Length: 228
Ligand SMILES: Nc1ncnc2c1ncn2[C@@H]1O[C@H](COP(=O)(O)OP(=O)(O)OP(=O)(O)O)[C@@H](O)[C@H]1O
Ligand SMILES: [Mg+2]
Image (cartoon, rainbow, N blue to C red; front, side):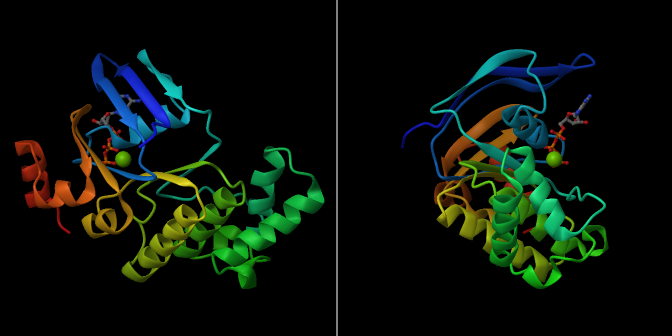
């Protein structure tokens, strides 16, 4: 597996607390899921990787540099139509109006929302808004898509739909780096699991091994306590 990201001695300290504690990690899988208990530092790690936070120490080495997009638990929708939300993302990346409009339409169609393209995005259901957020990210055809608990606020049916879209985005060649508290979802999406606890990397293993034969006590405890 070729590494696409190498993380060296990454730490983030806020108010005297080490939220991320000397993390060194090589990511090479196409679909990586970060697991860990509440407060472990999963969101913080993803935000550091996406460049939304700056580390106190340590460095990220990309090979090669990756275009990337991020999707959050609660989609951030502008006060305009679903289509205009997707177009907006493309224009920010420098696409001209015509091409942006066409790509945005196609991307909404890929997530099954072409019929809602002209609706005000903020009036769509949570699941539909999350699909607009995925369309906005997918339209950019990023090499890496980072998702922080993308289905945490959704009902089971909407979750499965979002999961199906994530798998399609992965199949289109985009790398996936995500977190979830849904272990079934982690099993269905991940190739590799990174397990973190209290800001530290505890295990990094192929998905089957993590669930069948967790190496550490912390991971065993986590799997017992987490509701599937
Ligand atoms: N800006 C900040 N200042 C101080 N503490 C912070 C800050 N941001 C996060 N924390 C703390 O760092 C820890 C890790 O937070 P983070 O949101 O990364 O956890 P998480 O693994 O994503 O948890 P969850 O599963 O609940 O989403 C938590 O204890 C949180 O309260
Ligand atoms: Mg989180």
